[in-house]
Amino acid sequence: MRNIRLTIAYDGTDYVGWQVQPNGPSVQTTVESAIAKLTGETTRLQAAGRTDSGVHALGQVANFSSRCAIPCANIRAGLQTFLPDDIVVRDVEDVSSDFHATYSATKKRYRYVIFNSGVPDPFVRRYAWRVPADLDSEAMHDAAQHLVGTHDFRCFESHFPNRATSVRTVSEAVVGRHAGWPVWNQPDSLNEKPCAEGQFIWFEIVADGFLYNMVRAIMGTLIKVGRNVWQPEAVHDIIQGGDRAAAGETAPACGLYLVDVSYENGGLLSSNLEESLSPDPDCRT
Amino acid sequence: MRNIRLTIAYDGTDYVGWQVQPNGPSVQTTVESAIAKLTGETTRLQAAGRTDSGVHALGQVANFSSRCAIPCANIRAGLQTFLPDDIVVRDVEDVSSDFHATYSATKKRYRYVIFNSGVPDPFVRRYAWRVPADLDSEAMHDAAQHLVGTHDFRCFESHFPNRATSVRTVSEAVVGRHAGWPVWNQPDSLNEKPCAEGQFIWFEIVADGFLYNMVRAIMGTLIKVGRNVWQPEAVHDIIQGGDRAAAGETAPACGLYLVDVSYENGGLLSSNLEESLSPDPDCRT
Image (tube, rainbow over all chains, first blue to last red; front, top):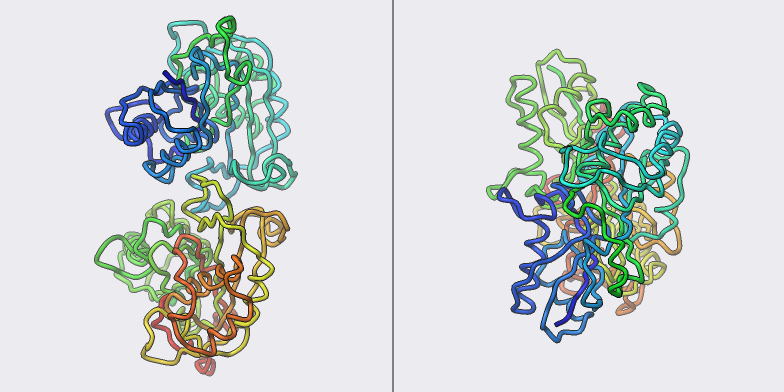
């Protein structure tokens, strides 16, 4: 039995999210359906992040079991012929039997993109949250530094109490202006270089796991700092207080991207790596 | 009676084109419906370019007559509340009674955007034509120079013979690589600077008028040059031959943008400027 890992990019606008929902098409069922057409097998995909309705992915990771003999490169091309053009399989790899896209993940990177403009743009609307107000991106960056470290993030969790802990470790949190938005296929130079005058503000966050709606609740909080309603230190106090009502509102889904997922040993898990389990794999972001 | 000019940007993906069609929503009827809701008046919009199904606009121009007393700035904000987010009214101005968005236009600029990548991108698919093959953008630029000047362009017209002349004057034709695609709201620097490694190839063309599907037929021809199937001089021979079958195929609509429209006297036409009538206002592009 093969264990096959997919790296998937998708425009989440027209989906109810990664996971199966009664009210519309999910990314998961769409990809599972393509796998069934290609291999003849009914499979269940395990994904690194259960992205919510309208949330995008540049590098979602999912795995499934298969008895098919199709080489990985042909699986990629074959799946693409059965997928709509808003879902793209970027990579297909055979991984060891104990690899699990959800439980084996050690870190995930999310990006939230703000279009900071007084004028709407019909070509950006699906891929960024437009905020017309002047935003102080440096104050937002200062505020974001209070996220770094191991904290109880229940103040940013939509449905607390959850069934497990709300303690997570944030290893990176960066806010900066950019001229463009995150097309994963574009040259790194465009994606990586911040520029003072850019109309796009990117918030990048890396953590060992995320609570339900956590990035969007943080974004709504950082916006308050960017508008000078709150000081950057407010983020520290909000985390300490542990009260969801004290944080900012949940920012819209359209600006959020699951950028990539990290695994020990490049995802080729040996069984003794199971101690790196994600603390709460059931949470959607 | 006021004569009101609108400058409109739209994502044409989900429309049957500018003009009313039986098979789906048109941009024209969508904007006319918003005007009716705002002013209570039934109007008919005149547009500079009848963009085809799936074609986008950064600066479409249209005008309509109205007895309403609403100031221009309020018309802009008011219309936007009745418009879907894939149509954005960028500007509203009072113009003289003899201004006609179609007939008064002296020049139009179209842009065709190619995503030159072997890997599909779910975030680009609506806004550029993906061509996986290696393309020689410099050869394409050389080929495009044969378009400049006054020529009979029937070789690039989908439905020749039309009811009028197929002679047009092309004043500019440029092909270059760019890192990003044409978001009109972004800093000019990103839009204007070509870069050798960019994955996007832009074809910009300015003319006094365009024949039906002309830019897309030219694009299909330039692609043949970019792939080294034809030499740049082939464009000269194709124009001389006047045979649509000798030119390249019509490129897909998703890569085409009506960028802007020029008018004498900033659009505030006096009656003696009527000699600058477009030669064939009925043509769609």
